[in-house]
Amino acid sequence: VFVYTDGEGAPQATTHVPAATLGEIAYLRCVSTTRAGAYLDWGVPKDLYVPPDHQTTRMVEGRRYVVAVCLDRKGERLMGSTDLGPCFDYDVDDITPGDEVDLLVYGRTDAGVQVVVNKRHRGLIHQGNVHRRLPIGTKLRGFVDHVRHDNRLDITLARRGMEGITDARDAILAALRRAGGRLPLHDRSAPQEIERALGMSKKAFKRGVGGLYKARRIVLEEDGIRLLEE
Image 1 (cartoon, rainbow, N blue to C red):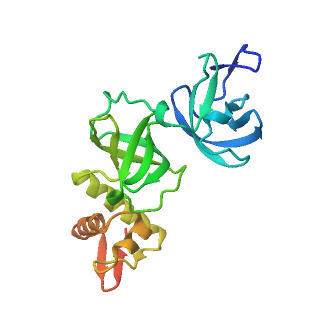
Image 2: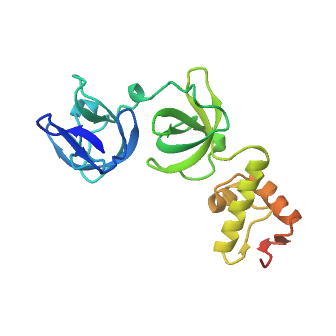
Image 3: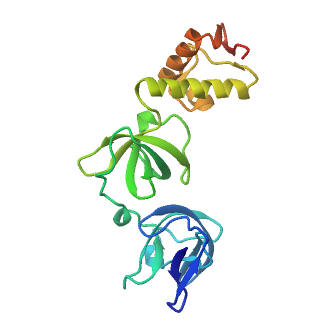
């Protein structure tokens, strides 16, 4: 069970699973607002309270926000905060480059897309590694590319080496099947066109296509690629 306190401070228990627990970050919907603060649906009977001074922008009922679950000033009750900086966990000793991780997009900078890693840690997908639109609230899987000296994490969406090539092959095959066996993509296609269609770089596309062609899974045509009968 998950144990929390009700409005009177008495302990309550539920078998419902919350979207996030203490120290974790989730994308939650605001269900009501008052002068005293906002209340978010986080999967348990009692809504998560977010005080006004912990709202980086005033919350609006019906909208969703990336929120950290933390303790109030007395350290007694759980509450939410959209001020994520102080809430991130910078202890990343158990994370190593190459690890597959869960990601939640929470912002953008000139450097790239900001993500919450495994509900707790601070990460960045550098702009050169972003090959599709990633709005705030997007959940996806990624890989740790580098653990920085400040214990923030550089993230990539594609694995390196042979595993990355295998991922690209699988993505191209899946797209071919969805499209009825043919895609109008080839060596002369613009990188932006490939990114929109497959969510990968042109380099990854060419490596994936090369592997599928050698394995005799596809045929290269003048204006695209075609899946051979399976």
